[in-house]
Length: 137
Image (cartoon, rainbow, N blue to C red; front, side, top):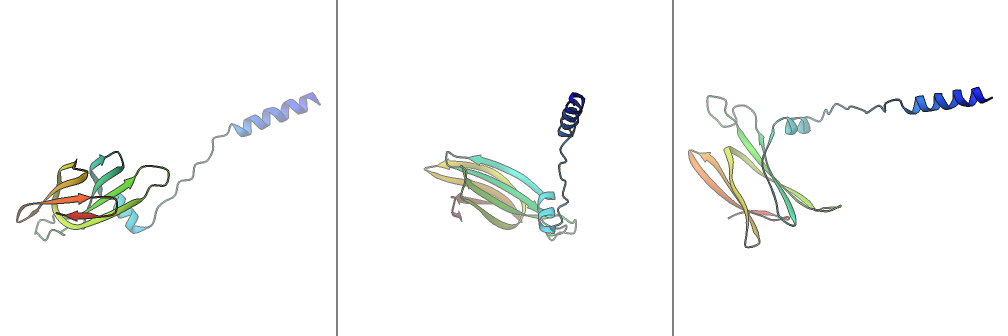
């Protein structure tokens, strides 16, 4: 009887020590696949209340309209509160050529993003960011 109890105990501990299988799932949603394969985090910025991420996602080859297949990018501005159930929003600015974040800062209680892009010459967008909206100023 003691041998049976010892054998049962050894078998139970051996089975429980087996590595847990972690599932691996291939994502087939083409939008998600494209987004996550073509994004670049341009800038991350935080205030006491908000987390802001400026994300560039390149468009298809040739989208800039030049013979050399250069691309434009879509700029996503992700804004989130902190906390267990944060309010979150996502804003999109489409088809900018060669976008760059020049500056982002909090000034007089407002968050201002300075973004440049090329449209024959370099142009600047000054964007006011809040949790509920973005506004080009």
